[in-house]
Length: 474
Ligand code: HEM
Image: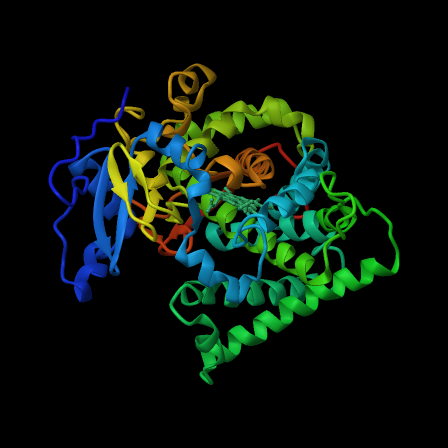
């Protein structure tokens, strides 16, 4: 199906879109919820939409063929968006914020650490962390699944990246609490980092900024501490950091390995990029399972038959297709990265419309994933949309939770495995229900990532006969 876009007309042709507002008011086009604004814009104005926001021209691409060009053919016409450019003040020059040629080189260096063969080793970490979590849970309790998912995602990324076993010592709970609070204070700053003049904001002598500065110092200390520790020996500990430190550039063998500062930027990026995204997706997925008991029962049955009472290992991933479909459908409805944005680096054209230099060109996952042409009854939760047969009937970029092209998420393989394993272990060990009186809809907030607006409180009952060795089993 080709994009449906009216041909350009007039002297200053813009694609269809909402009328321009005066400069001081145009940021308010997003009103309450920018993700929903983009969805309504796509529904009302079609495959290519134009509007002005915060004084900038925005071109919103709502068709898979346009998004394909955006990620592939036109990729070199774009810079990182303004948000990422400003984020450099906080995140440094890691994979997420850097531009070519640095990005291309760093991507080449980091890619082997995410290779399929390495991810197999991370599978054991995910499996044992998931089992350790359900062993800590009490049957009959009500828990905030978002908090739980943030904690486990941090444990997993911490262990995969640094070999840091946050469960190993007596101080582990304090340690994870410290790291967690440093990461969340830091995450709390991210929306501010994307405002103009983030360097100045960071220096303001107000308590919130002081807390954020402290959290940054704490994270730097943790990361540099680990880098210095590793520099003393050159043993490959099998984690991401070992791989990043050992990485050499095959295309430029004379180039130096990563400096400590570059390693710090990459580690901080991976820690932040790999943590909240996965945790949010899993929080939504568990809420959806509680809302759809028949789907939950099917995930549980699959997990029992594949895993019995042992933790999942790498080879199990292919044997948990239904858990993977559930995760995929949660990522469709609530994509943690709800819009992918770039800034045009040069003037060019889309469907005959001129795109000026400096415009925002955006591909909104939240809106495209709810297009009824590719997902009939788009608001309905239906994991069967992701059966192999159904997937084959859709164009590549009707669904792109991990973006695409040369900036496609480097942690995608890890995220799929984490999603499927955590869903499978939890559904095997517990039955999740909404507490009495809980709302039937979940409110979401499109911030740095799309997250639940409120705690995701779910009631947990241990499933009989599984994991009897766990200390909390009744
Ligand atoms: C469900 C979980 C996840 C989602 C939905 C997600 C989504 C994305 C998306 C859409 C991008 C591209 C952003 C852009 O083009 O502007 C991205 C980039 C990235 N992600 Fe993920 N991600 C997830 C998990 C992870 C994990 C587990 C890691 C690492 C452990 C990770 C590390 C990264 C990094 C380093 C980048 C930058 C890649 C580059 O520009 O070369 N992500 N992610």
